[in-house]
Amino acid sequence: MAEVRSQHRAGIALVVAAAIAWSTAPFFTRLLPYDSWTILFWRGLFASVMITAILLVLQGRAGLRDLTRMSKSGWLVASLSTSAMVAFIPSLQLTSVSNVAIIIATGPFVTAALAWAWSREVPHVRTMIASVVALCGVGIIVGGARVGSDILGIALACFMTLMIAVMTVMVRRHKDTSMVSAAALSNFLGSIVSIPFAGSIAGVAGSDIVTLAMFGCFQVAIGLTLFFLGSRLLPSGQATLISTLETPLMPFWIWVGFGDVPTLRVLAGGALVMGAVIADIVGDMRTQRRSG
Image 1 (cartoon, rainbow, N blue to C red):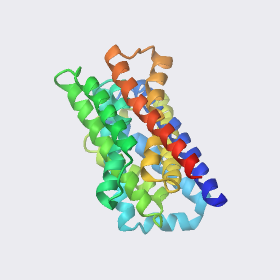
Image 2: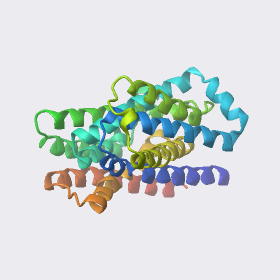
Image 3: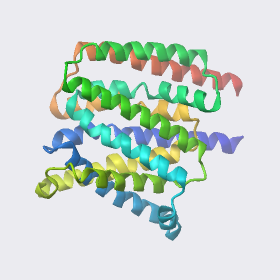
Image 4: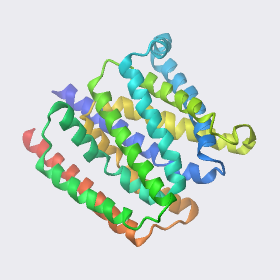
């Protein structure tokens, strides 16, 4: 029992660290004056190299074997991760950071619904109520969307959230698969997919290469690796729930770095979503105390 609790705490710490790393994405995106495909190419390239290096440190040559002999479940997780990454950067460029952040906050509820559909795990009534409240919050945000690019950005953020939810359930179900290898593969695939559409791959300035390297190594490589390692130690819904800690940090970094203050509509919708997430976390903690 002590070992299980220790693994649970380690999982929470890893996913919290992943959320902090992920929250810096809008900050790096705002620093780079390039099209989304160019950013995706360089970010994915640096991230795949960094994750491969992490594999070598953690597993030695066995890590490289895992990478070259990827299982079907590993390829599926890598494809889902790639789809989420391809949607993420354009969503940040087409709509506000706050919109993307709040839509991401609905991820735990999407994951819970998928876990129920897949394994028939009935979600707690508390989670169902929180889901309804969170969806109301998203409705408030989307209600203020402009016709055109804003709606497209929100649609891409919703698609990304769905892909992450499916990926999280897959990671939990296939614990025998090397998910760190899948993370490396997903970033490599993201770079390949970006090549035909990127307009400035060869025209990136030297100073921006440093920013792209930090973007790929810290936000993607470290964040994704920590999340995959941590989510294997936690229930799918809880892992996604903890990862929503990135939600308040995303607009926070933009406010600190660029002075971009969220609108009242986004603040109102965000308060509903974050309130639902926090209430579900607190309720889950109380339930675990009583059962322990």
